[in-house]
Amino acid sequence: MIGRYEIVREIGRGANAAVYLARHSALNKFVALKELSRFDAGDETAAARFLHEAQLAASLTHPNTVTVYDYFEHEGTPYIAMEYFERGSLRPLVGRLSPAEIFTVLEGLLAGLACAEGHGVVHRDLKPENLMLTDDGQIKIADFGIAKASATATANLTRTGLVVGAPAYMAPEQARGEETGPGADLYSAGIIAYELVTGTVPYSGADPMSILWCHVHEPLPPLASREPDVDARFARWIEHLLEKEPSRRPVGAREALEELRAIKDEVVERPMPVRPPRRTVSAILSPLNLAVALAVAVAAAVLDAIWLFAVGGAAYAALVGIAYLSAPAPPAKTRDETGERPRRDRGPSRPRFGA
Image (cartoon, rainbow, N blue to C red; front, side, top):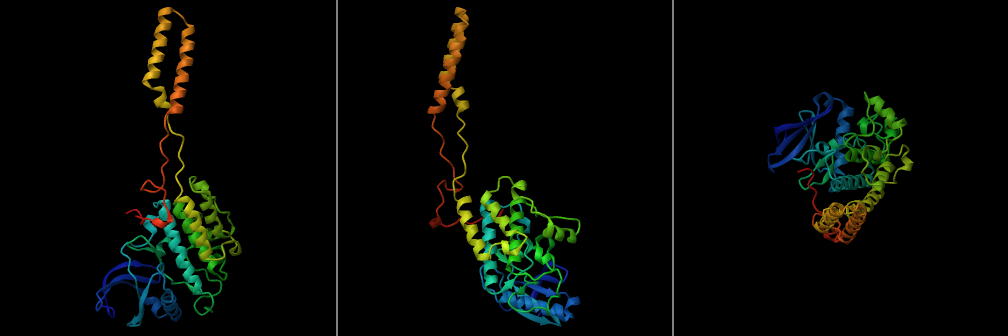
């Protein structure tokens, strides 16, 4: 037992903290219990940052952010009790989601970021491992361990020039150790979107510093070069989030979310492109056309009239053309499983997320 919580098992461990599945003994409720490592528990700065995480996360009440239930200390070690998600993080599903599911993930991410932005909070460590999946396929942002309140001084919690975050998802200004704002989270959201579409992050390297150098200096690999079938408007939206200069990105998460929803209406709800119907084979193999061609060939052989072959060929081609043009085209299919064009008033179907 740790305070009021019975430890069930360990579900994750990082450099500075471990996370356990625990049960609240009085409420019989399962929670994720995050423990600051005992080595860091004696570090006043680390302990202050841990408390800071709990306070920031608790200040955000939104369907797309993880709920913090409790903060306490047990035998000198700080703990945070928060929502537990049986399905875990988004990481195992990266590269396996349908377009509709990708839009659902990004909508939830940006809605949560808009809430954080409204409270003056910058996450600074967004990655698929920190996006948790609910039972109904929604996204919740977790792990505000290195988040900061953008409107307040936090010099006592982070050192100037210290680079914190996951290198593969880090904004250029964050990679340079500069002050970060909401635009850094939008850049990280763009990296996540890029990875969801292509299955890979845009920059990789042999070590963290080489990856950070790419974020700062290397042009973004065009998304269409890795995923040719991506919608052009969606690709431009992602590339807008990944501008090197924060001032060239969307003004905020809410604006980015509105742009995404406008694109979703086109990408997900419009009818799928349909190729011209394949009627050529059925026209060529039409019994009537084959019978005419056979009759002309027999007559030409019997009468020893070579010119009849030319006439027969022309007649056969004409009949094939008539059969092709007169055959009805199959109806266009839509992206909706019901066979009808989706409408907003019908509401979105629940994403399956690979289940």
